[in-house]
Length: 289
Ligand SMILES: Nc1nc2c(c(=O)[nH]1)N[C@@H](CN(C=O)c1ccc(C(=O)N[C@@H](CCC(=O)O)C(=O)O)cc1)CN2
Image (cartoon, rainbow, N blue to C red; front, top):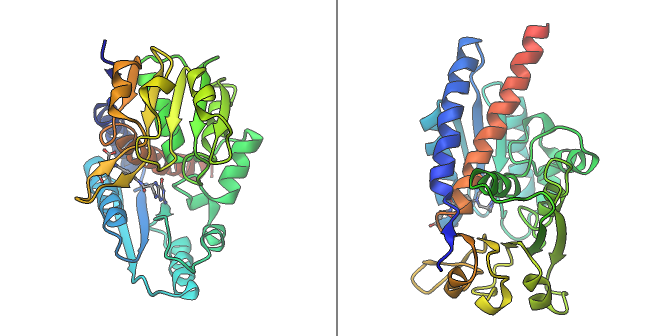
């Protein structure tokens, strides 16, 4: 039997419809959420993602503040834009699109952001809050994955989850999100140093594949009925996405999140959730006085 689809497009559309009402309510209270983006360089993929984020903002009523620098921008020039966004009252939350060009210290840039305006959940303060169990913005892709599974009724509580990859946007924060009391999964993190990846994968009820290695996850690695989420992005010679999951996995798994159309739209939806939640917190602070 072929796996059922974890449909990121439809789930993201439902989240956006809820957010549209919440943004309208915020505006009635005199608060207009505004998402800022900083794009450095001309990578076509990054530009596509940033443009998509602003299209989403327009759909739900969030204001857009777009900043761009050439790929030759210095650390100081990038940091000057970060300082400007920190001060800009119209920008209630923002992101620095990753990756930054080679030679730029991305951690220094992220640390300079005002943590109260971190829309990505990737600021060291936000990640620290996640470790400590304090409320704050959650990393967009990991929490988008949780929402996608919940929306389709895939049980996370008690599940054995294997996360493949340890990058900053997905692999590293994913286990932190999944092992919170509210998710309560048991997580194994695999990476290039893992000795027998297949042995780990075969035990998994849920696989999050974020290694960036084309077709790394083969049908014979997957437990029948498991949920497999493909988050890897490699490109073929025509620029088409090749994910981490072999197409044959759909014949073994119970659920698959396709790529494109699975986790990507959820990343964008969760970004909007973070912006709206921050604006709601600000509105509550305002009314408290
Ligand atoms: N500051 C950040 N940088 C990056 C993040 C992030 O969360 N914050 N994640 C990725 C890129 N990303 C968001 O920025 C992102 C990736 C994919 C998608 C998406 O909707 N993809 C589509 C397919 C797109 C295509 O055809 O190329 C899909 O999966 O259907 C949205 C956002 C790295 N950088």
